Amino acid sequence: LASKNAKDVAIEIFSLSKGYNMSGFRVGFAVGNKKMIQALKKYQTHTNAGMFGALQDAATYALNHYDEFLEKQNEIFRRRRDNFESQLKHAHLPFVHSKGGIYIWLHTPPGYDSEAFEQLLLKEKSILVAPGKPFGENGNQY
Image (cartoon, rainbow, N blue to C red; front, side):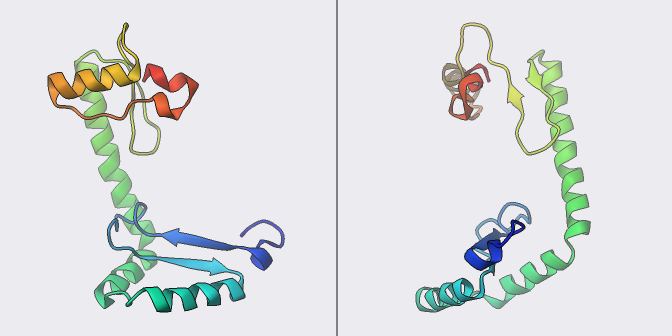
């Protein structure tokens, strides 16, 4: 909605699922063009029985304490990343250091594309990874 005149023709829908660790809660909101929001509200009234009050309270708390939550969450993910990367280094497995997000790009070994390596890890080590091929032309080497 930051674009010029966007509020006249658009709405933004925001979910608390990933960024607030509220996956499965189905909590979110929409902002923007008033008529569109009213139409969305009318639709929701006829298709949804409402939100459990405790989930609304949790969402309100999360929105009001996001900076504090984000700091703690970042530290948790930073420790997880550092631990995982340490284990990859110990195993002499090449990877791309993750500067953000929750993913690490692990290089496929010579002779493997991403899907063959994914199958090898699953069958031999019971490790489930996502092959890089769907992420574009260069993804097949991860």
